[in-house]
Length: 439
Ligand SMILES: NC(=O)c1ccc[n+]([C@@H]2O[C@H](COP(=O)([O-])OP(=O)(O)OC[C@H]3O[C@@H](n4cnc5c(N)ncnc54)[C@H](O)[C@@H]3O)[C@@H](O)[C@H]2O)c1
Image (cartoon, rainbow, N blue to C red; front, top):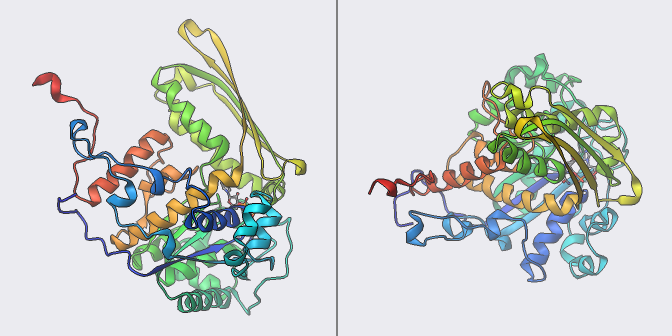
């Protein structure tokens, strides 16, 4: 660590404000978790920034610092939280409503959680159809709504005395839509905001407001959001990091663990049928075919990229892949994901694998939110701008530079993330090449 870093990283001085559109299950579980960890009531299980280590140099050197000691990350004590939602519930009420965390834990955190009152949301029922709430902004056009969000951001920063900010979308999944003419350039987009172009989604108004104020933006849902030339242009112009999309938790996480293993051993896959039942508000929104289609796109793309059927047609060309999500209220946030995987081995002999993952969606997502906001802040202090591909590790549908395919294999993603940290700090990259055979 004494080596000279490849980039100058500004210190993490002062407070970091975390701004979140959407204060539902994921957000309330994330904020409550950070407050519990700060008080020593719980451990940050699932968080690479808090628990992970990084090997430096040769294996014989025995140097494996904690990631948070290796790169300058903001300590949890220096985080402040703000959110927008269409419902007026504060973070304590939202957490109770989400039914993810025990009431006894939440009651110990009542004071800090009750203080987080959601700001009025920019919302449009054409983009999220199943929910209706009163805490919504009005404005003459979409540009006015964006300006109102910018006022919120400045006011939050002032009130909480933050030196830096990061925004992360944890709002509902918006309906599937493709980039349109209004997304082609920044000037077309700004014109579209003034004319309230229907192709501009609420999440894009939040992202625009953030990027205008040089606030890094991460997208936890599969919405199009910043994946359009206009907002990429703004991110580069204002030198702001962005990343997305769709937190890789639950079933897709399992897929990206298993599929690289099958391919590593040259085992074939003829079918992969995935079905989920979940009963939280996210599940209710995903009942709408428009929102489901957005989700389906990111969930389906994973296997194709990992298995590379073009390179291995005998093994993967005929793979039948289906994903279903069913809203089933009794389960709440405790999702159940079933996978039936039909594989084949030597001489084509078939085998089956069944997975039944009784998971907790928001428990899996919350540590990813924490890691992402801390790493996005680090990226900005290190002068990194535009799409942060090294954070693909966290996403089902990683954003990539135009023309490049995303990397979905979680082990390659982790290596890329850690090598980026090593590179930032001027350490040798680890290739796992053992040249000792030649000594
Ligand atoms: N939990 C996971 O494992 C996981 C994984 C991947 C992606 N996601 C995505 O993360 C998002 C949040 O998930 P959740 O379980 O917390 O859902 P949730 O339904 O509990 O919370 C979403 C919140 O966003 C609010 N909202 C919707 N549109 C808004 C807008 N325009 N402005 C402000 N608030 C808005 C809703 O009122 C709701 O309170 C969803 O899009 C979900 O698909 C979750």
